[in-house]
Amino acid sequence: MKRQDSATSSGFVISDKRILGNAHGVAFHSVVRIRKHGTAKKYIAKVLHVGHECDLAMLTVEDEEFWKGLEPLTLGGVPHLQDMINVVGYPTGGDNISVTQGIVSRVGVGKYSHTEECLLAVQIDAAINAGNSGGPAIKQNHIVGVAFETLDDAENIGYII
Image (cartoon, rainbow, N blue to C red; front, side, top):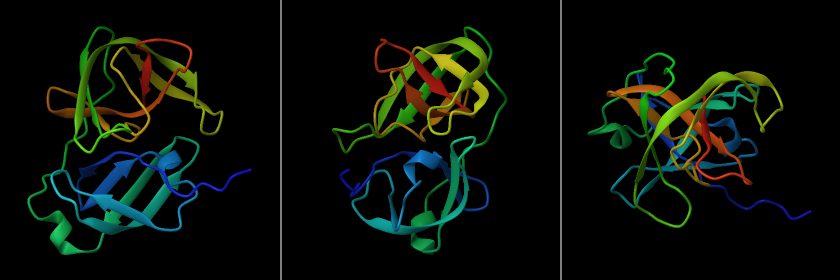
């Protein structure tokens, strides 16, 4: 088995100088480096909490320079069927932010691939690609989910938690 050298994931700023992302993005970390949109500098992040069951992780950056100019996103509720959702992240293959848009097509309990737990999952038809995991799913300027997986053998099916 080949040792994993690095992983790429997305995340977003929430209140109290915290960053929310996916647990699978930091699952076997030794060092986590975070880059702000529009800059090349990477900051060392501290992993505060990892919820493997729900595939969520909370991080922070102690360097105050990182937080300059950043506004936290606000959390909203669970989206409804047919809601329009924007998914933001940094998919593999580019250094620029990616925004995809889709419709909520299913809200229900689903099996999470990270731990095989069955928890709430929202199916959308917005593209979610490798590296997008951990990025925010936004509806009317509120976070309604976190991008976390896609189906390899299907087209235009992604999931947010």
